[in-house]
Length: 269
Image (cartoon, rainbow, N blue to C red; front, top):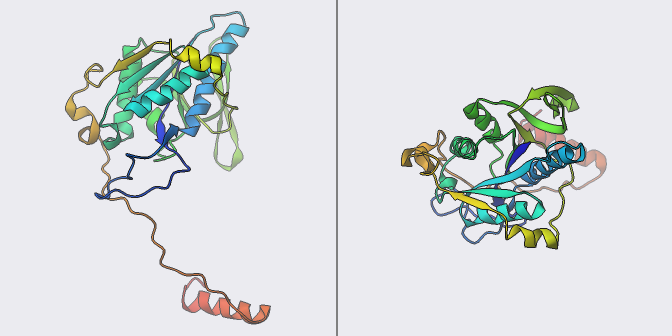
């Protein structure tokens, strides 16, 4: 079984973010970037699927990591290799941040096809920065593969995969999928492993293919802002326009004043 896991670099959640001068995105030149949290769970799921095949005596399979972007994408790929992936695919595109989920999905689909396809393509359920949650689903449509989203459990079967996916209200749905297929992985499905020193050293010797959009047959109008279906009009930081008011007096007096403010000022009752 060949499993490709997509990894996306996102700003470190501990970073302090500021909107850029053009109000089109955040100032990211000096930010630290980490692997998107949901994608680390997708990476672990890929490794477990391959290890499960080896444990059952069948083909152990191959776990491959894929990322799109600049040098920061290469860094998260090395982390995936250190975790245990067999090799990596780096789609080097300096304009990826000006594109949207559709552009990313097209690049992912083209890269998967150029690499000879796969049995399973895994992405995180959504990214920590934009949170669109549609890239994996779009890639499935472009590839013409079945897909399941918000997956919280995976088991290999003779016919393909049995997946459990989370629905609203805490309900769980079980589906049987034939391969090839695409899964978007929910947070908490597993416990991502840490890279060992041995894994980090081994990662330096593993293959990393580097392709650009031209290698994927994509023209200049297919990438960046020109290829995007969505446009970011403006990004703003939240503005504080209210202040906390402390109501003094006895509990009964404070409650009466609160009701009065809710009725006359907030106009919610």
